Image (spheres, rainbow, N blue to C red):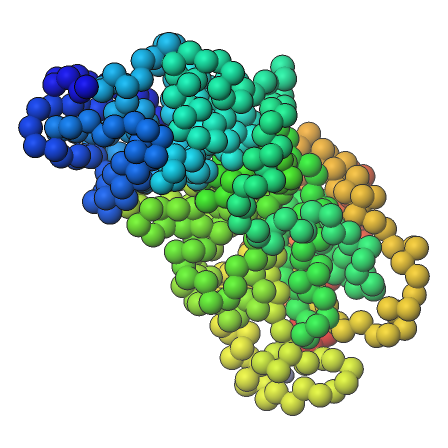
Length: 529
Ligand SMILES: [Zn+2]
């Protein structure tokens, strides 16, 4: 059946950082002893892919051509991960051996999918950037059905298939063999009806971000200062440190920050979904447009936080892009991990260098950290149960470097809530839905005035946008002397005061705005002295 000298070509894409360069899968059949070679993939991936392709072809009633099969994934110098090339390799073999004839123009078509041993198509990671690039190139793409919804968010012509046989029928010219997606003009695609099925069965890694979007700040009783700090943080994109004893609700509060942030714009939603896709999640309708909330454990490695490893995967700082990164028990994190946060906190980006590549990942997240006030956790608590020596408290807090602590704009005490507060009705507490409206209005003022949010104002811009009245100037001078404020601290206080004024729809920073900004930064230290 196989004729010597035939070459079939099928297009697919690799995943490099957040990009998706084209990969041509060439299949050559030659005379000689039976041999199946794949070049251009790492050795382990080759072994696995060959086994899957061989079994899938046999299960579907096709023959593995006798003689030499050479598969080349070009260009060779691109890093490639195994599974997604199974489908183009299998189709290339069928085309080269004339077991399949193309009834449509395959030059304008890209194939993706990992094959099960029975020929079923399994979802692959990182498909969204590939779909976006395919759309730019004007290509059709064929993807596993479990990826079809995700692909349809970026590409207009997606065919979702559950099995190798469906792809073969589709390539042969049967337009009904795969589920087509339809894109609605001017925005997000409507997922094809048949894909609802795939959505239900797709194995999606459940993460904390699934549950936090619906959480309302109103569910947390009391904690007025902390709630105010979160609202200010949301309005100006400021970072927050929550200090309080165990069980005081620091995590509950942090989880409610995404709900205070304005909805993602369509381009932002696509960016967040692209990162999630590259990070190993299958993007689904339920997650679309949600701001990420990431809360890595304090034992996390620097690689998992900033990204890297052999595959240069995005780390937590990138997975939290345009959302919230929450580090509970901040002093327990490895010192190197904490130091590695400085670059993304400063630039909103992170560079990861691998042998041949440098990846730039976006990492503009809102940073929320939590810690106990002392080693036992109860310093300043009304129970008086803390007996930590002053030296121990100092050492505990000393685990945080000055530069990192300086970058936390708002630092508030989260005391244990007494039972009387818990019994009070929540009626007079503002809901997240109400607060987010004032956040959106405050952000609009900032963008109109400076083109960016207050937390991102450069030092030289402070004199323009955060100019102080003489009264405010003397208040700042008095605080500087009393609290020994560094220049960096004063800059941060100015930005926060500007945000507080914006929340009040005020043109100028008034003394009460400045006083609240100082209190939101330094109040906790006095309370736990
Ligand atoms: Zn203590």
